[in-house]
Image 1 (cartoon, one colour):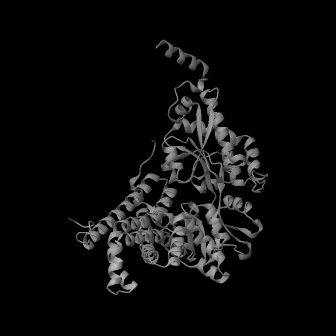
Image 2 (cartoon, chains in turn orange, blue):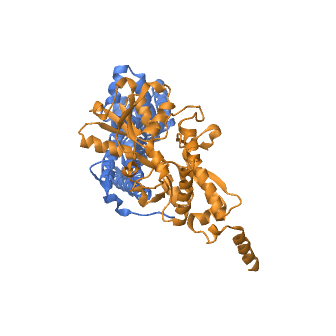
Image 3 (cartoon, helix red, strand yellow):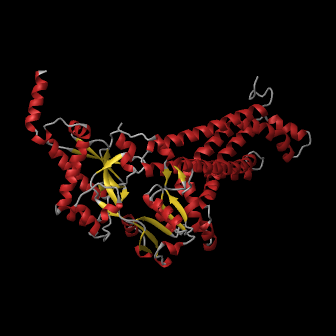
Length: 302
Length: 244
């Protein structure tokens, strides 16, 4: 009893004023285990993927590591172990719900429907839906694809928009759903599909890693407003959300974010040293200046 | 668990089709049933043929059918579907390959062929085992009556062998239905693909997969009951496979 009390007193005196109240939810779990678990993806270049020696690397992971640092300071922990667990689109929700993963460090689109299930921190990237086709096919817009097979990835916001546009503009596209981005790209490569509609950044990275990058052309036509990507965590955990939101807001307000961004989007990235050459868009710059977790694409235009 | 259950999600509008998520799951059910039925017809026809050939006296027929069975049985179904879908068209002449790729229901046709061939190897083994399980005297007696080999099969061996094989064939039929879920890998919009898309859009993963589980369970229970009824109907008195 006395020893227990002593430990509490020592712990309290070690902690800063911020941690005076006993943490709850995810913060409590992190404090008790001195471990934070990041959910990482294996091929979401350049956000979260396996780099040299099968080590997870990427833009989102760099941001998550900064968040982990902020949590460590907030909780006054001497050391905080960062564990990385592989997740896929199908496993990220169950692993988050059952407490296996604390932060989803991938390329998850933040939308209103998903916010009923999970929470997102401040948007760290904006992606626009565009059309990728063979250069030889000379596709400038969806109108050039009337009646042709067009592939997108099942369960993405992109395939949803594609269905909507197809119906609204009566294009008669045959919309194919591929299981993942790699397979959708394979369908374009083997001419099963005349075009692949997806987030521009994912298309750029697929082209950059293709056998012959010059064989593919990305459309100028944008099929959507920029969709926010967010780092996701459990819902209804306000103290954790405050810490994560503050950490990202601080990071986005500092010059560090430009350096992290450039490292992954304008400089050679592992493992093969390709350069994606996607400079920071003005809308993203604005989102960094005014951090927000809004799922509404229109809000990123103001 | 910190999971937000929203069972009403099934009644919300799905972005994929003009309808609710429930409607898209039912569309998936149609695709699953159509794929399974077509693949099963193919598997049963091919498998019976190969199984019968495997019991003929001819040595070359036995070797060929054994090779067929081992080829289709020992390569994972997912790999076979990929080969049919992505590799085969590239090996054909360009015009034929392009025609194949542009077929409006390419993933359905490929799934039927891929699953049909895969399951035919297993059906063939069942049929062969059924024929070989019959006492050798049956074949000899048929021959002694002056029946040709074809007549022996048609009138003596097969009517008994298929009855014996019915329970394992039921299992293979159930496997065919379940194996259609692998075809989501080649873009077939069956139940599993619809459930996955639903959980991706809405993040209601447990609701989506619970629905898929119940759908598969329901189909397979119905199939099992029907097959049991068929088994009872065609059972041979005294063969041990029917009611006492």
